[in-house]
Length: 288
Image (cartoon, rainbow, N blue to C red; front, side, top):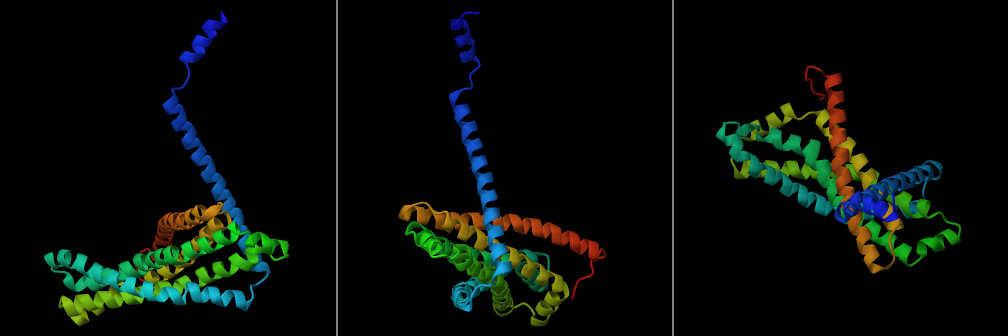
């Protein structure tokens, strides 16, 4: 076979350029995603190593507790109140059509303590605190302050990340309880005061259908959500690209990735906890 014939056959079997670019782009995206996940897992391992070996000082923990917990209370409380009222507005018409408007309290409160409270608090924390942590650490990376800490002998993971990690995982349960409480108050106010649902029936149905297991599920999931927010936000800040645009991208990416991971982990935890509940209480008995 001549060389011209061989070149012609190779040209005939060549992958079309658009398909080739599509395959290479997706392949590069998958490889980069796997590298990021692995690097983030190593980053989380370093956080846990420092957390178990040396506890941070009070002077580095308390300011982070204040910024993560205290300053987040107003927005979480306000948002939780409106979520409870919105649930009452959206559910009342459907329940009134079948004569079950007195069961509205059970639906609102169960939705809040099992799902909306933890996810709402985590979303507020990812938007308000996670983006701020990524921006602060990204600015420190761009201005070489993290490198300066390393050159002075201080470990930046222990000094900068561990206090933020502790603040997120320890205070998000309190924020979740606040979101639950304010959502229940908002739903009660709109259902009983505005819609005229009987006070006793509303509270009695809530007590009958919402148990301790539902409350436990929400609090248990919140610890995982807080860890996700801290790890993702600090990782994005530590690996920030140069310039103001890099800091902005790190802050945006921290919220997006945190929110997606929160929803994915929420699904997995719901499946796992429901399976545990069915195993322990096969006949549907509630943990009161």
